[in-house]
Length: 265
Ligand code: SF4
Image 1: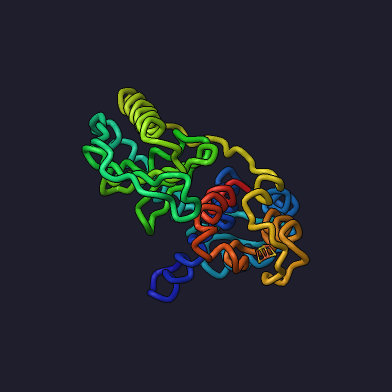
Image 2: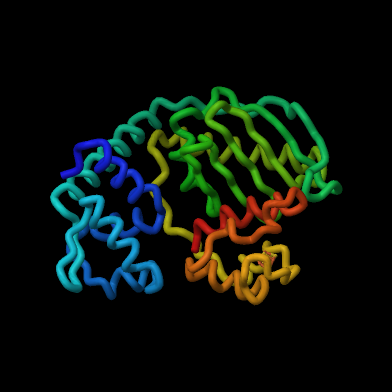
């Protein structure tokens, strides 16, 4: 069972990846064969992910059968316990207000659209992560303590500190509408007093991914073009950071959209 710092590092590394977390959750209900897991995560990286989980001591692998190890079961149970604690916190949450818009400035990616800053009071803090299921396309980042929400062209980011930033807004009225809707959705959930249930992910399709790629076919990613890159992204054979152009300021908005969308592959 992992105990020393090196072993803990292996567990942290294994669980830092969403595909491997998906496998661990899939094994929560018992044994699975590798074919069943392959249907969920694809064939290309199956062996690699299973090996990482096995090295971390989280799973046992016997021929084609995969199951949680004893340590894996304890690990998962502890995680679930932590989630339950957070659910209890949610019942203490207070309704939020969104203070006046503090700033309106042109978006870097598209100067015809606006970027808006506002404040959420009280700051969502620990319940921010629990709000993720409320929005069909959203992505919570532990590292940044932020929840990014995508709706059409508009990207809203809420930070645990209470800062709210909205991009690709047409005008102040639209900003007010988005903020009002955000407040209503969050307060309705708080009024129920229980954290929203984890939702089924809305799957993203290939063309949606392609639409937000730069579509220059520059091949700097070593692929035949953006469409080929999108196909490989869908099958997890490449990661977003391979697209060199997305790192440029003019594609900042596309990159943010893609960061959300790729969480739904
Ligand atoms: S680097 Fe980006 S823009 Fe260039 S071909 Fe690849 S995906 Fe397209």
